[in-house]
Length: 285
Image (cartoon, rainbow, N blue to C red; front, side, top):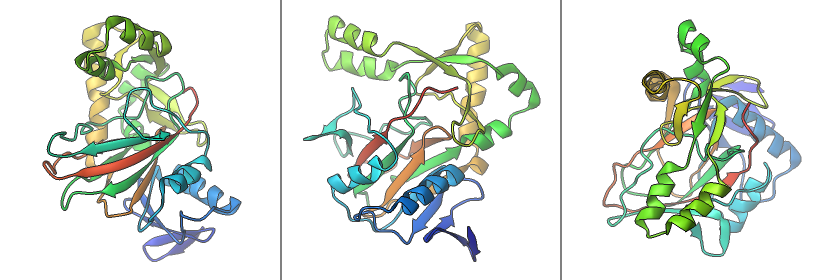
């Protein structure tokens, strides 16, 4: 990797970091074209190094979006979120006057799955004139910043993850108890480590989040709630974060195993329309 003033060069890609540990804008690549093996390897390494990558001025089609994502693994079909017609792997995320943004909390995606996602690639289709930024938090740094006492308390601990929010949403939409129970059987509550070891970097990261984590296994509710509240709060520390301002044709690619994200919902009643493709992952250890 070659160091430039304010940026890095990795196998022909230009990386411009947003902060010392998380977030880098990537230049020198056209995602509308098939990628060479060296480019794929360089992007994967950059993702491991920076946890989230940003690409500007990438006017690509849905098929090109999918093709780019498939360089990094198989693709997930989300069982609850709205999909783009004809493209089951593409989440269509639209907010407007009738639908306020509701992803404004720190979370990792689909941790209620047995094998949560490796990462997601989010593409801006229509953005508000102001607002609608996405924030990302480095959960390695969050773990490293914990006190030795807290690290000792969570060493080897597991937490239960569940799709409780989606279950409530299905009930509001009129799904019958029998239909909801079918989803419960397909996606039973999962136990994942409170501290995940990244399968590629070997680094430790906090792996609980306010969206899907229910409680710590074997711990009474009062202690579990207090400890989880402390762990959730680490993502909100500015020193662990970067913030991305969307522009037309911008793309973000984040490592779901090492980061959390928060979509600022400060743009109502303007329109924010995005499409997300998610890459299959493995079971956390």
